[in-house]
Image 1 (cartoon, each protein chain N blue to C red):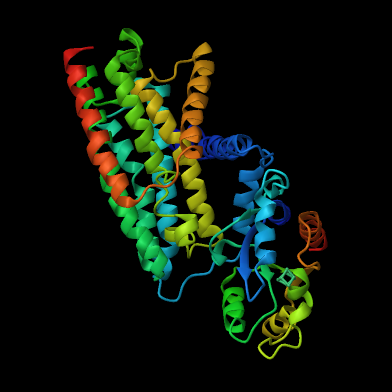
Image 2 (cartoon, chains in turn green, blue):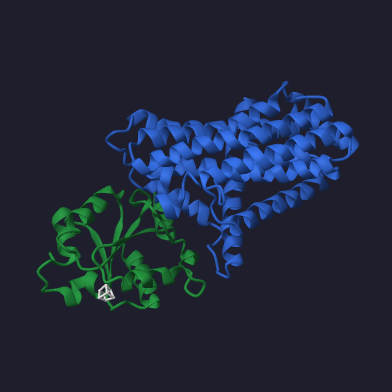
Length: 143
Length: 306
Ligand code: SF4
């Protein structure tokens, strides 16, 4: 089983979930696929279905409208899975914190659903690609 | 006993999956280099399989539970059997039975059929769009390919793998003639469609349907599918070598076979990286129009002997 666990770290498939982000973080994610940063070096790739995902990349503060969707996608992802909170909005709701439509930071919502969810925080507005790579790699190391 | 070893180890499951997974790595690496990227390390495909086995399997509520798990294994067993028949035909040319070349081609169709089953049982709307496309694609590339197989078989005067390779060993490979070249090019397109790779990845259509027909597969179910796809990549290229390029012989012939195999892989990869996805009506027109016409032309040329 050890080798399977090791291979998990070498092959992370990422599902990108944009939940009420300002769209800047979403654009920044695509940078990871460009020749300069090429995350396929680490075996990571973007997939189109949460069923294939090993990591959920959540951008944005969660609005009341997006909350049920976030939980639905989290439930649909096969475990073990990593949740990467991306950008200041994902980590702490950022500048949208006191808005009437925001229902709180993502980690609080997810912990209510599943107390031992594994979360990686990558702050920044938006984070630099180097920071994203470092964050995901450190998160895998801590797994 | 011997048959079990043939099926499970060489040239069956273990051998074919190692070569197949290395080939999918080669595919990803070369695609990355074409796009000026670094690409994944050599063990990437093995890590993917290991990772998928480690994960949880989720079965959709609407799905038929046992069918959802058994169908991909069925596909995997079928491609392994196809590769074994091809391999044994090389080791011992007299071991074949009449019509084995047709049997092999239709064994390679079983993964697509099991995929259609999974897609339609999973109850996902995007999967069902993928299913309808997969069925149409299956119907369209089959026609030119079967015409080509019949052409080759009537040219060499026998429907077995042994007789095809034997004829080519004596008379030179078919690709040395015009009809062979035309047939080879058409067969490359058919294989690309059969493997569901770009530009014929309509059933998956990652940017359009999410993952389409694969949408609900997870964990070990997906691993079985990925593995059968890798084995099919190896098996179909090998099938092409046997059909048009003189097969594989011992000694220095092995090196030649590896070169031929790599060349076919490069064709497939270049086709993948230089073309956008077709619509389903375009794909059907392409196969039933140009490709079938080309296959009939190749048949006529073969009859005339040029
Ligand atoms: S962290 Fe900044 S860039 Fe990212 S979604 Fe929030 S406001 Fe936009």
